[in-house]
Amino acid sequence: MRRFYFVFTLAIMVLAVASCKKDNVPDGSNEDLNAHGNNKVTSILLDFKQTLKHKSTGTLIADSAEWYLEGLLNLEQANNSHEFGRVDFYHDTLIVNLIGNQVSLVDLNNLYSAISDWVNNIKQSKNNESYTFDIINLSFEETGLKNGDKNLAVSLSGGLIGYIPNYVPFDSTDYWYWCCGMGKCGDYTGQYIGRDATTELQFKFRHPLVVEPTGYFVSVQSSLAMFYDYMDNENPFGQYMMFYRSGYGPNVPDICPSPDELNYYLNKFDYIKTSKAIPGKTFSNVEVGWSHGVALPYWEAMHYYTLYFGEKIENPK
Image (cartoon, rainbow, N blue to C red; front, side, top):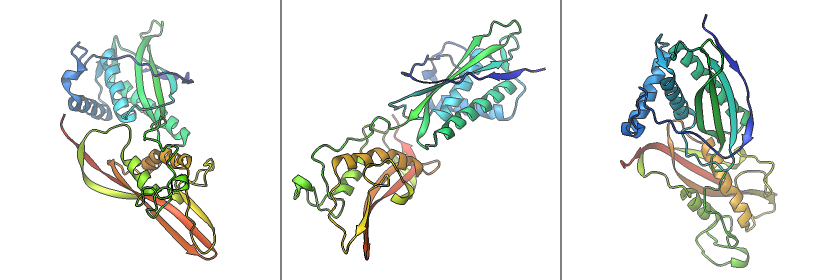
């Protein structure tokens, strides 16, 4: 009877990221993985996934099984920019029955499903679409039992991409009228006419500190983000993650957001961008617009974002 059971030892720690490098190729030789090239490695891992789906009755030696499973999980669950400010660590231990030094593909398929479910459950528990994983590390360890079983130690680290500011922040002189190209405001009124808070936010959104690989886009689609979809009760400047004001009167006032307020909207952009992502497409560009209206005795003033996503064709290196 095949034995497959779990010993859960879940722990959450905030630590520096540490991982060990595995250089073995799938056949267990000492050839450097870089010799395969990025596309070749990805192809190997996707072929392995198809093998698991077909529920083959074959086996793999433990080292190769570890390499394949870890690589596939990282490809699917931790394929990102690895830019986290605060990292959560999670640990689990699974006990796997080995036949000699071989792991059955049936067991590997069960391990793959179990770990994927665990990762997805953690992600869902965060209730934040921007939460993702930085690295998934697997390691076979001896159990001390005589029956050949081994522990498969699973370690995850995750967090929020963009927790470290991903954009050049507004400085102490960045008081900008909210719209209409009226330039700076406050002590800087009259400067930079033709620009406003929308043009400055748009420029910073389009120029993150992390430079993406160059390339071009095909099959571009747009997605509209409106303030009312992004309520934030902890926003010290209003109710939403985007600029919005309302009040009483026949006219919209000349509103002058502070640098701190503009930095708040700046730091919320990655969350909004992630929430509007189109499956299978990469963020390309954003246009920041403004709108206002008067319906006596009320007025409203708002920003909105038109985000563009496409299939990115990266330039060869």
